[in-house]
Image (cartoon, rainbow, N blue to C red; front, side):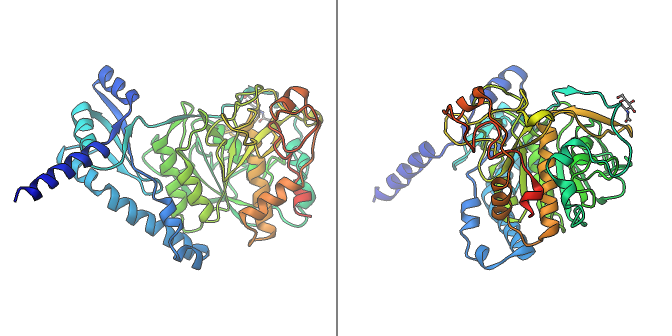
Length: 447
Ligand SMILES: *[C@@H]1O[C@H](CO)[C@@H](O)[C@H](O)[C@H]1NC(C)=O
């Protein structure tokens, strides 16, 4: 007769032993020091079961994306329900459940809440939210000498061959997006092609009206599709933007909110340009990247400004399933010193995928002026603009085809001996861990 109760007790004990939530030591220390902390309760990813749903291979286009986001919402909400209920009964109000990744963000919670949550059954981790930085421009150049004659494209736009395809397409209404410090929609370069959607996940303003209190986001968007002074690679593309960062960087919470907002747009952008990142081998944005990929959105990321040493690639740019970008100089396509080099830390995976112009790049600035900046942040939107041109010329082109075309038609500058070492070689060899497959040439990619 005592058989059943014992079994139940054993099962309970075993369950609690195996499936207690982990609280990271970083969060514990923060709680000890400050009493309260922002935290993220992170559960196992649902993406592999979403992707293995048979409907995913039967559907295409918006039907597939809508099915996928619906399933993501359903599955995360089911797995998060016990925690949300617990948070409610603990009186914690400032919570934000996500569906693009299986996690809940909590603001300003104390040790009693964390302890109560961690005692709940399940496989999960409670940690501090990741913080990332803008891939900050490494230097500001002289902006006085640029030509205002219309038709004269800036050096980077010319170098990647964009002008050679402009008689075929300048982007033709294709929708592009960035996640950055926001965009000044009133700048003459960007007012004509704003597509009317802006989201402020950074939370600087109460209204979702476009603004940029940094400048970085206006500059990067200007390079993708600015319409004046030849600054934009795809000047006839239209843009939307999510502000996920300020000059002080951004949090995982803001950046995941931006990823979700982009996936929920009725008209999806063809590319998202990301000139931000930090740390190495960080996998925390990979569900977002996978979801974009499935929705037909090309993820482009800066590789970071932590060069010139080998193994300095930053995350998420150092992750798979995206196009990461290093920066070249105007003179001879020399690799910029600051540009992070591969490989992905602890592996032989080559990073970045490609390189693009990233030194003395002239683009728009929120006060209505133009500024010349240097950084992999400036190289990245050249690639995003190239993707927009390719999509405009061929709307059905897939990520794989874009990747294949862009990486197989690059120009291949001489690799410096220091950079050859990053690929364990003394011979000129492509791909390598400085340029990846080379400096992009969109004219050749579209030939
Ligand atoms: C160049 O930069 C200065 C200072 O940042 C700014 O005031 C000026 O308007 C800029 N020039 C142009 C042509 O945009």
